[in-house]
Length: 102
Image 1 (cartoon, helix red, strand yellow):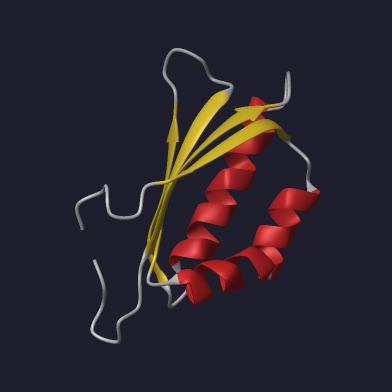
Image 2: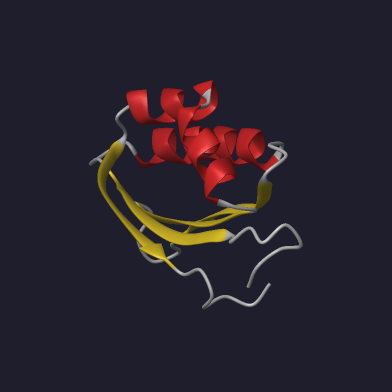
């Protein structure tokens, strides 16, 4: 899918596991990140989900208008603050661009 300016959207499914005993802190940090990221002009969707069977497991659904918007998101203070908190034991990101319906 391409936008009117021939931009290719970026869509990712990101699975995160909290460090042991840090799931409440990670959830709070992810909620702050979700709120700030959703306010970015290039963000189409940034949705946080938490597993009901394992409270250490989280999923982010990320959708940005293009790679430039995604790269900008990665450099913004709220994103850097999230990474600097070091609450994540593991992360697995899957590019699902073109696989998810708009």
